[in-house]
Each structure stands twice: as C-alpha cells, then as structure tokens.
Length: 177
Image (cartoon, rainbow, N blue to C red; front, side):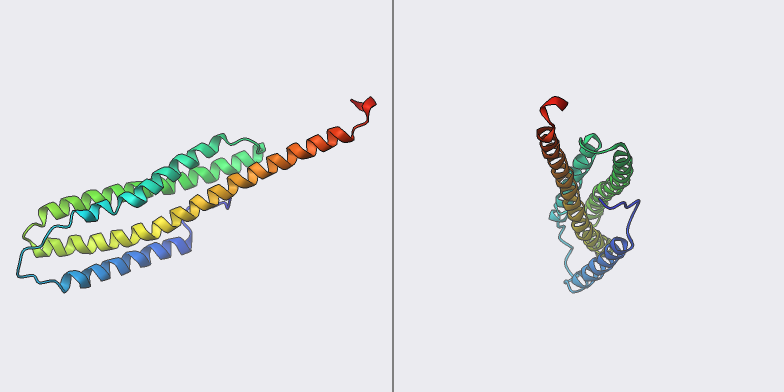
C-alpha cells in the first residue's frame, strides 16, 4: 500500500473540478427550465448519495479489518496502522459529506416548494455535491482495489514462506531433525 497521510493533489483537484462542473451544469439546466410554474421537487436526487455512501461504508469496514491482518512484521504493522488510520479519516470525512449533503438537499428541497430562487441554489448545491460524490466514488473504488491488492500480496507472501519452510524442512538431513 502506498503511504498517503492525507489527500493527494490530484485527488483534491479532481474533486474540486467535478464540483465546479456539477454546479455549472446544474445552473444551466435549472436556468433553461420554465420558471413560470412552481418548481417540482426531485426527491430522487437524495437517493443518488446512497450509492457512494454504501461503498464508503463498506470500504471503512474493510480498512478496519486490516488492523488484524496476519503475516506481516512489526514494522509493517506500524506502517499499515498509520496508513489505515489516515485512510479511515478520509473515508469518515466522505461518509459525513454524503450524509450532510443529503440532509442539506432534503431540507433545501422541502423549503424550496414554490420558490425558484431557493430551488436554484439547492440545485446548484446538488450538482456540485453530485460532482464531488462521483469523483470521490472513483477515488473510493481506487482505494478498494488498492486494499484488495495489498491483501493479495500479503497472502501470496505467506504462501511462499510456508512453501519455503516445507522445502527447507525437506532438505534437512535426518540427523539434523
């Protein structure tokens, strides 16, 4: 696993760029709508945040399980614990973001009934949040793949060490046993 104590520059830039693109796209979509009639509330937008929320929660559980991984040395365990703690903070931040965004959008949609100005602001926030969610979903999937690769490498190393031990035992002469 790569040792990342926090956000990477590329990941942060991608998240900010996706937020800007989502907000701009939402602005243009809402601006093109007929504002003579009251806005229709799109409650389905909140459910979009459930997808990355479930991935983030699953990844959080998987990273917590890494603390008890077998087959690594003490120094490796210290590095893994440090890296896992940093990644858990990132995942917890993402989970809080998804939940807070869904709540803000929910309350915003609730209070925007008949008010285009509030609906416009909530839609821009929704577009930005959706952009951030999609970018972070790809980052979470990347973390998940990295976690699986790490577990596979540790498992393969344990298998190699076990086979090597068997070979060394077989090579010992009968009087050494």
